[in-house]
Every structure is written in structure tokens, then in C-alpha cells.
Length: 53
Image 1 (cartoon, rainbow, N blue to C red):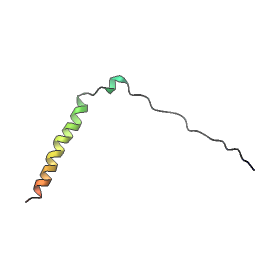
Image 2: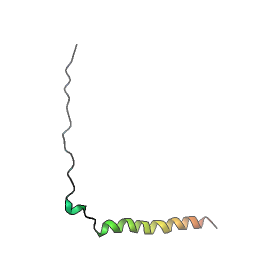
Image 3: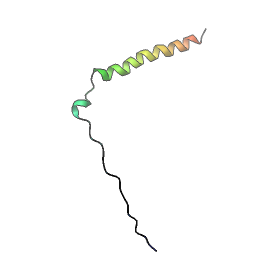
């Protein structure tokens, strides 16, 4: 008894490449990681030094 199976594939949506004008980093792309680092490091340092008392 051999049953034939119907294989239904999902639609192939894929992804679209990012346009070239959006690949170039802008000022905000540099500002966000550096500002996060500028806030995170002092907060971490304060927590480490606060435990030394």
C-alpha cells in the first residue's frame, strides 16, 4: 500500500537586500553604542567600588 504524499512548500518570501544608502553608518549609528558604553562603564565601576567599603 503506497500512498502518494502531497508536499506543500511554504511561499518563498525571502528577504530583500538593504539599499546601499542605508548601509552607510550615520551619526546615530555611532552615538548609540558609545553613549551606552559611556553610561554603562561608570555604573559598573560605581557598583564595584561601592562593595569595597
